[in-house]
Every structure is written in C-alpha cells, then in structure tokens.
Length: 280
Ligand SMILES: NC(=O)c1ccc[n+]([C@@H]2O[C@H](COP(=O)([O-])OP(=O)(O)OC[C@H]3O[C@@H](n4cnc5c(N)ncnc54)[C@H](OP(=O)(O)O)[C@@H]3O)[C@@H](O)[C@H]2O)c1
Image 1 (cartoon, helix red, strand yellow):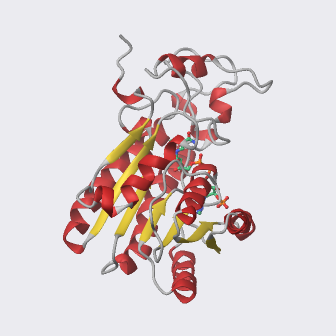
Image 2 (cartoon, rainbow, N blue to C red; image 1 turned 180 degrees about the vertical axis):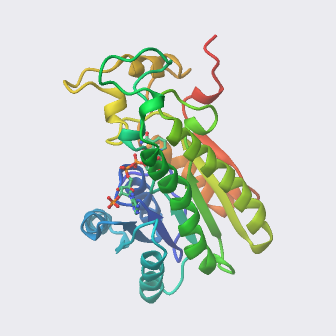
C-alpha cells in the first residue's frame, strides 16, 4: 500500500487484533510496508489470510492467526504461534472492537416512540453488555496476554483504538460511547502502569470515516445519506469525512520511537477538528 510516510520498522514484530477489518487491515499493511513482520489476528483465519496475501503482494511479511479477543486460551495459542514463527513480539495494536447494532437507541432525544420502535427503556442491555465486553475487555485481555511478552523488548508499545464518542458520548450509541471512554481510560491507566517497564501505551481516536461498521448509522437502505451524515460533516471544521488512509500517519508516529519516544498515555484524535468544535 502507499503509506503517507515511511518509518523503518525492520526487525520489529507486531500483532494487530481486528487485523481482518477495515482499520486493522490498513494498519497491518502500513506496518508491513515499513518492514515490520505482522501477525494479522481475527476470529476468521481465512479473512486473515486475505490480508496476508495483500501484504505479500506488496513485498511485506505477515502471518494470519485466529483468536477471539474475549477468549484467553485462544489468545495464548495465537501468542505462542507468533513467537514460534517470528521469535519475539514488540508491538500490539488493539483494533478489534466496534458497535453492536441491536444496542443502538433509534432516537437522538427521548420521545414517545412509534409502535414497535425501541427507546432507551426497551433496548436489551445484554446487547450493551456484549458491546462493552468487546471494546473494553477485548482490549484488556490481549493487553494481558501479549503485554507479558512485550516487557524487555526494544520499542515495546501498544496502540489502542478509541473514538470520538470517548470525549463526549455520541447520540444513539450509549454502550459504544461508554466502551470507548473505557478504552481511553484504560490506555491512560496502562501508560502509567507500564511506564517504568519501557512499554509505551497510546491510542488513536478516529473521527468519521465511511466503513462497513458504521454504514447503517450513516446511510438508508437505498444508499441515500441519513440526516446524521450531513450533521457530522457540519460538525467537522474541516468539512468532510476522513479518508481511511488519513489514519495512518498519526498511528505510525505513535509506533515509531524516533518520533514519540517520550509520548505515552496520549489519545490522538484524527478527526478534522470534530472533537473540539462546539458548533458555533
Ligand atoms: N469505522 C470507524 O469509523 C471507526 C471510528 C472510530 C473507532 N473505530 C474503531 O476502530 C476499530 C476497527 O474498526 P473497523 O471499522 O475497522 O471495524 P471492522 O471492519 O468491523 O473490523 C473489526 C475486526 O475485528 C474483528 N473482531 C471482531 N470481534 C472480534 C473478536 N471477538 N475477536 C477477534 N477479532 C474480532 C473482526 O474480524 P473477525 O470477524 O475475523 O473476527 C473484524 O474484522 C474498532 O475498535 C472500532 O470501534 C472505528
């Protein structure tokens, strides 16, 4: 892939959870383009193999590993497979996560709902529970399992994925907002906890990008944009959605100790100014 700028990560080994997804796949390709060996982790090894094939076609080196970020044993197996294959591991990117559609509240403000329509009072909190688990526990558990082998490695670092909803909750997605606020808090907690062990911990907070995950929130079934989509553009001082590759430069800055040796506990917004804008 074309990376906006290249850093030299040769000799380094990274694991990207959710590496089979849109953002994780791009981060896996960017790391490999900079010379790192990359383990692409998702529940589906088959999806991982597709990313590995793309990386190989670009001349990079990667392997697919199958694990569920909510299952310790599968993560330990993945870790052992990576260590057996590449010998060490020094970068963890926690990209698995996302919103659960059935945990969304259909309205921005409470009102009497149409017959058959949910409100906050009727959504099944089991779905919110799954959402909190995936985002918070799904970041903590890989940090436990992989973090253990990052200790003592040169350029040991972790990058988590937060969200605009961590700064101020976004309408309709209370569980996801709480989950990503949790990821931001955990990032800061880890940065302190690991500071004296030489492991840096930071996060990227993406603004708005068109991806499969948020498609239903932004577009009607016939492909026309929902009013929410225009509202997002109007609330972004730079006046557009981001391009997915805009997420690469800031990420590589956090990974590369030559740029960010003294940076830990940072949540880096890449958002066209969305999180600072008050609307006036
Ligand atoms: N898209 C956006 O605009 C946006 C904005 C802010 C933050 N984010 C965050 O960025 C991250 C990536 O988002 P994305 O848009 O790239 O999502 P995506 O395309 O849905 O990718 C997520 C990947 O995570 C993997 N995954 C899901 N559950 C898993 C589990 N239990 N164990 C292991 N892997 C699992 C899935 O792969 P398998 O099915 O193979 O397991 C999937 O490929 C998420 O944390 C998301 O919340 C996205």
